[in-house]
Each structure stands twice: as structure tokens, then as C-alpha cells.
Length: 278
Image 1 (tube, rainbow, N blue to C red):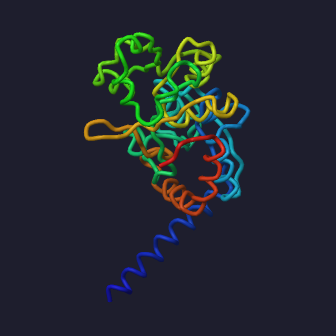
Image 2: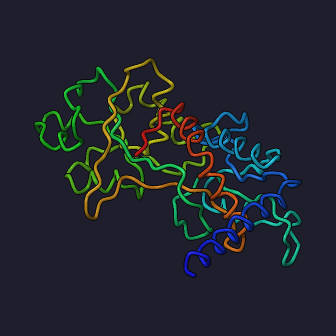
Image 3: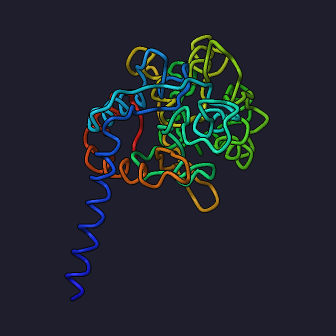
């Protein structure tokens, strides 16, 4: 009897998911994205989130349509939650339906199962006097005071890297950057890349995908990459999902199925961007 009940439930789930994907077949795959946010998304559609959106849309027999908006404070409100007609009340016609990259469990949306997990890394430019730091970021706490005085390490507001610097007694050597700069010409990864090349900074504790972008902009072996190690009370690795409106349970089910079905293809796309995966 239990086997029959479980089989019935499984068939019902499959019917729901496949039936939902059929109902979406005539729709466009409407993505909320930042037009200048490599390596995630760009208006040229050459970011890894762009490529994954194309993959999933193709599976559904759809074409991708973008709503572009800078991914800063108010992004979800102005894209995923925004009606096509601004003065509409209780509208079900939204500007876009999917945010391709959000932390799993993000509180403003419903999130899918994770489709990748990355970590913050310590990225060090080679040939700047720090080539002996190769195993663990904690090595920075053991160098002489004279060497610490020469530290030029970028740090961001409210990120695990800055918390780590504070706990390690290195905060005074950090060069502050804003996580959301408001710069129309550079996103965070682009600015860090430029400042590393200009030798304004020698290293940075940065989220894995952004580190991958910086690495891709320089000749091979230009950087040492050291994954940061999570510990109790200090997390550096995080799972990432796609986000939909909390009421959009059916679309979430479709995306969950597509993520599972295309896991290998998604991994291949992400690997092309030098992103450290766990």
C-alpha cells in the first residue's frame, strides 16, 4: 500500500512539473538582470548567467527576454516585483520572472535548489612580494610587522573577508571598497581588476565568480588563488540559486527540474569562467 501511495505521489509530481513546463512553452523566458555585471550578466549576453538562461530557455522552447536594471538596492523591487504597467493594481503581468543568481534562501524571493556552490578566495597578484603566501590566508597574520605595513589588500563593506581581516588584526591595512559602487562604467570585479593591474592593491578577499573574472582578464598564472576556509561563526562558501516570486511555486518547480536535468551542462558553463566550485 505504501509503495502504491509513493508511486501515485511521484506520478503526480511529474505530471505537475511536465504539465507546468508545457503551459510555459508559449511564454518567453523573462530574466531580471544587470546590464553590466561580468562575469554574471552583460547586455552583450556573454556572462555565465546569460548562458545558463539560454540553456534553460531552449529546454522550454522559449526565447530569453531581459529586463535590465543595475543589481543594487531595490533590484528585486524594480524588476521581479514590478508590474509592466507601473500604475497597475494587483497585476499579474510582471516585467520579468527569474533572477538567475541569488543566495539560496534569499528572503525577498522564493529560491530554487542550488545550481552551484562557490567560496570567497584570497586572490594575490604575483611578483609583488607575496609569492610565499600560497597555502592559507592565515599566513598573512604570521609575517613580520614590517611586511604587514606593506599590505595593500582590498576590503568590502559587510563581507566575510572584512570580518576575517578584523578578527585577524589586519583591518588597518585594508583599502576600503563599496560592494555596490554605483559606477555606470565598472562593476566591482571590473574595478578590482583595474586597481590590481595599476598596483593600487596587491590582493583581495573576493567572491569566487568575481575572482574568476579577474583571472580571465590577465595572462595565465598572474594570480595565486587561495580558497578561504569556513569555520564555526565564519562562513565563506555559499550555495547559489535562481529566484522567483514567492507566489510562483509552479515556475520554481519547473526551474528545479531543469537544474537537475541540465546539471552537467550548467557545470560546464560555469567552469569556462574560472569559478571555484565546491
